[in-house]
Image 1 (spheres, rainbow, N blue to C red):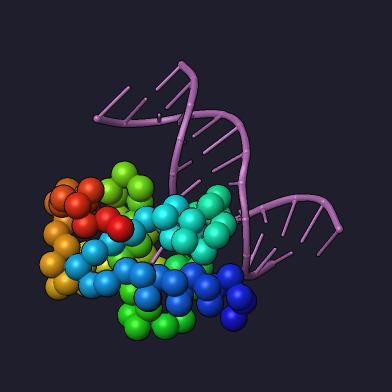
Image 2: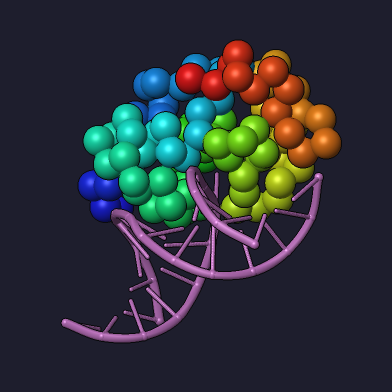
Length: 99
DNA sequence: GAATTGACTTAAT
DNA sequence: AATTAAGCCAATT
């Protein structure tokens, strides 16, 4: 467990409530490493605390889903259950629910 | 320590 | 709208 990862997980958990989403880039910015968005993706990929740490609420900057470690349908399912809808692989009303 | 590898993003075709 | 190229950062090899 690296510090960078801990920072990602704790920040994500406390800043992004159910029903909302954020992007890799925004999360990176929150932990004061504005350009580490790619590394944030890697951290999410390895998330040992899923779904306690809501890594499914982290998506691409353009409203695409981004990736998911196990299978992408699970990510969609978790989001839908929280009231975040997905259509054609894109987040619905992305601008309004993205932190 | 160098090289490689991603759940990335932006800008340019 | 779709593809390509080039930067970026941490972890892993």
